[in-house]
Length: 366
Ligand SMILES: Nc1ncnc2c1ncn2[C@@H]1O[C@H](COP(=O)(O)OS(=O)(=O)O)[C@@H](OP(=O)(O)O)[C@H]1O
Ligand SMILES: [Mg+2]
Ligand SMILES: [Mg+2]
Ligand SMILES: [Mg+2]
Figure 1 (cartoon, rainbow, N blue to C red):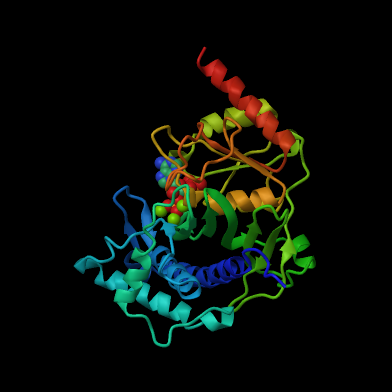
Figure 2: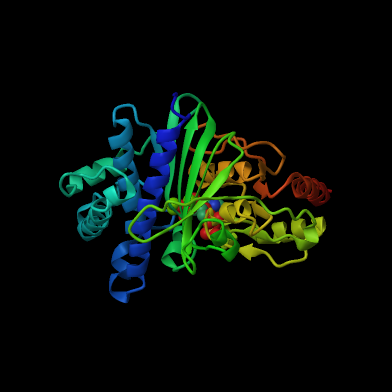
């Protein structure tokens, strides 16, 4: 019998996101200790934070993908690089990354993944991180990774996500989101996620399957059960929950409040770090997600690829503010994006929101 399309890719991606999420949980716990907080976080040139977890996840995902699919023709587009980590003054940080990576990889077989014969040397870890320097593009297969999305949320002990997607010829074929702090609902648990009282899940979907799935995160291993995800059936804006980025610098809160108000939304917006916003739409906890960054900012593919396919396969709609599909074929950036990104649980809310965008744009340029 022919193997199911992308079966190995999907299986590997889901398993490695579980493993990566376990690394993040441990690092986030350590960040709570005042003694290690500073040593595990660094500022990038744009003043955004990067942590042991960002580099650690990028290293293990890259290493596992290379083991399973061969390093030769592997293309990985990912957020982090090795520049600051390779500097002499970063020796302590590199040591912390190395410990986190080797601790996680020592558990890899519990996740059904390959495991190194001996702990990886720091040179191998830097190589794995540095290999993820592909620029993507319109042709061929590219893995797309945001090792920690919402790093600000991560360092603040809040929501964040591990996001891995596979793009082929510009289309997102599969997406996986690890959401270690996502509150898994009781209703979800009754359907097979049999870990009462836990938080944390991994969501995943394959393009065109019409299905999106959620597994609980379980400590130290890979779960048997998965639950089907479905977007909310609410299409009345009065009942809808709108989510958006926490930081004003990342999305225009005033503009989105105006849009929400004009489409008839009454509830206060839910401000959540990271692609957990896509997760909330996919599993029916929210109905609308909007992000309107400053016009000088170019959205990156790793901030959206996994979330978009999961929301779409769970029954939702994701477009730019002009109603067009996001274009993942142009390299690292979502080139040609019209103003902002909107994701809705269904067509009705989506049409109302697009209408509100047009009305507001016309009135603002009068
Ligand atoms: N100026 C600006 N405008 C818009 N977006 C930006 C900007 N700067 C960064 N980023 C990217 O936003 C990612 C975090 O988005 P969030 O939706 O999680 O924002 S927020 O943290 O809740 O405010 C964040 O992802 P991570 O770096 O992976 O955390 C960035 O890729
Ligand atoms: Mg990100
Ligand atoms: Mg990131
Ligand atoms: Mg970042």
